[in-house]
Amino acid sequence: MSLTVAPISRPGGVRRSELLLRARELSIVLALLIVFGFTTLKNHEFANAASIRQLLSGASLVALLAVGQTLVVVTRNVDLSVGSVLGLSAYLVGTLFRAHPNAPIALAFLVGIGVGVLIGAINGIITTVTRVPSLVVTLAMLYIVRGVDAEIVNAKQIDPTLIPHSFQVVGYEHIFGIPWLAIIVTVIVIAVGFYMRSFRAGRDLYAIGSNPDAATLAGVPSGRRVFTAFVVSGGLAGLGGALFLAQFATVNATGGSGYELNVVAAVVVGGVAIFGGSGTVFGAALGALLLNTINQALVAAKVSAFWNQAVAGALLLAAIAFDRWLSLRVERLESGRGERHVV
Amino acid sequence: MTVLLEAIGICKNYGHVEVLREVDFVVNAGEVTALIGDNGAGKSTLVKILSGATNRDRGTILLDGKPITMSSPTDARNLGIETVYQDLALAPELGPAENTFAGREILKKGFLGKLGVLDKEAMRQRAADAFTSMGTDVKDLDAPIAALSGGQKQSVAICRSVMWANKVIFMDEPTAALGVRQTGKVLELVRRVADRGIAVVLISHNMPEVLEVADSIQVLRLGKRVAEYRNEGTTVAQLVGAMTGALDVSPNPSTAPVDGGAS
Image (cartoon, rainbow over all chains, first blue to last red; front, side, top):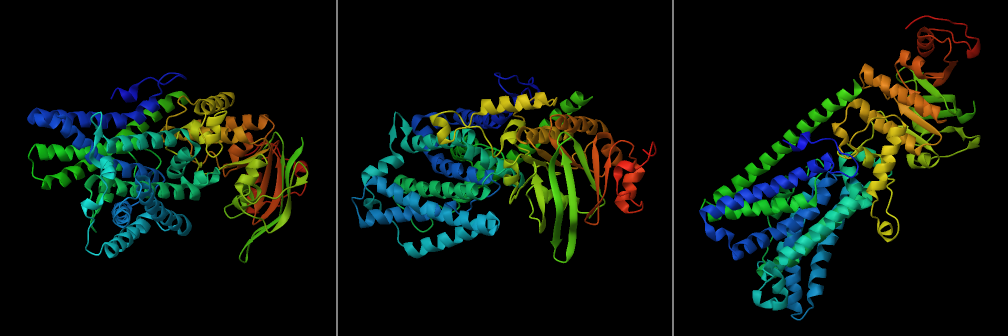
């Protein structure tokens, strides 16, 4: 690994720690290229424009939810309710169009985001006030929201003819060959990524996840920050619901089921430590893209669909093993260096 | 030698347990004051009270001769009182620079700063200056703290408190987890902190270490301060005797006529 033996940085130069941070994102990009290259060799159709658009828009929703999930996971929490939130939001936005066929598109998105923000706020309040582990709180919320959704949907579904064309454009049209979905999600990834990197509140999330007691002693408003992370995760899941409806133009009571697991998998594969304190939204979004690409590659290679999940699972294990190996290696190298200084 | 922090008649009960019984405690500017005592003597409780982490039941705390009240560690910090906790209270995934400024980040000037954008370069620079001026060797200000040796971690924690404290720093067993060589480094650092005019309160179980670095030694036993020594001429045997109650402590430490001895 040439990365870990790079010389110690000087101010102004590229810092080795920054290289290490990037290492994860670079390795995902590399994996993406390998999967993409091999599949294209076997099946040239895989690299045509329509297929690539399919890869991008197929990964967009999971990537969007992975952004919110990253904020939550970085603080040592998890939000399992995102799939249900997405489903409920999609159905309610559809209901809006059923009641008011000429409702403005902006209102549709606001309704979707609003539903998510509300549920995210409930998750955040319960987690920060009662100190019940978020795994349990959001698991309960997963079922509650799904139940509410089923009750509202009542075995009906949204009829695609109800959805205005101008709204659907966002879901499956493209501009300059790039799907609108992918553009929207990319803008959000960059904005949130910058926020996490350069803003006080963003850095606080890392401090909280890295050592909660230290963060509190240092005067970081932990409760408020964790609450905000849940609100953002919920809000993005709500936005995802609106985009889901725009993409598929229909949704029933099972819309978005199982998304939470894809999202958590994307986040972990993307290098966000499940115990908090490290990882970026860029990595998480790339993780979503990688998982979707592998999925599609298996389809293109005519591998049985049953293998999809097994491969995703194996990749998850590989990601965690790689993280562990990397951090052990860094620790050994750095402490070896430390000893030399002391002696 | 000016008295910087003075605690008078501090009492603290947990239920029926009297943890502190009318404890007096004095810290001078520019000195290392060791606080020693057996387990359960009340050292930690006293430090928690003096650093704002716990409330006292009774008693007065004077800083620069003026009575103060603190209801949180943040209050204490605003008064120039910092604490280096035993478990370090550093975030392992973040670098030394970020740890130094956690909760007190420098924002960029102008509009971006109003939005909450951090000035990372300024923080890195200030942290680097602080580490250099304390003679601490931290090479990579962004490498995760987890990758540093125990001594370096402790040095980062101490330098951080030095950057912010202008009055008093409490250090709870800063060398407890360190090897011999690293302990030496950290003790040198403790000495340099005091030489800047800051009052350092060192909690320790290690008597030779206390005698090596402290100017004054105050002994707690069963919730009372039972002895106060100046370093000169004090022996380990005396300290242990005062801690355990085996020795009948002279009420006036300056007359304790001892020379040479253990360690």
